[in-house]
Length: 88
Image 1 (cartoon, rainbow, N blue to C red):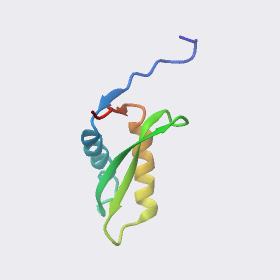
Image 2: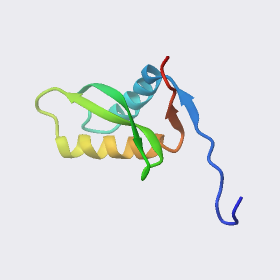
Image 3: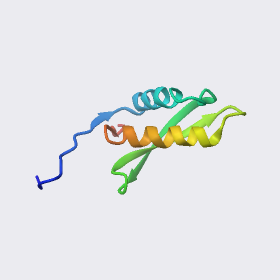
Image 4: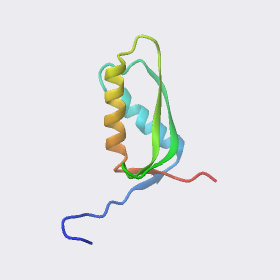
């Protein structure tokens, strides 16, 4: 290990489990009660060092700026902890 860096071990999770975790996180933000569902999609992102992204579905009337903030914050928090387990 190079001095000043640390190894990060991520947990591999199934898509439905990561969707449940992310939806719970997003809905915990004030103003995100309009989020009805989310979908986790497999996508390798070498910049963010993850293999998934979040798509959000909302009802009419939601504050999209607030929802986008919640999605970005949730993705940044969870990408350090989880990678999507390959589906067979």
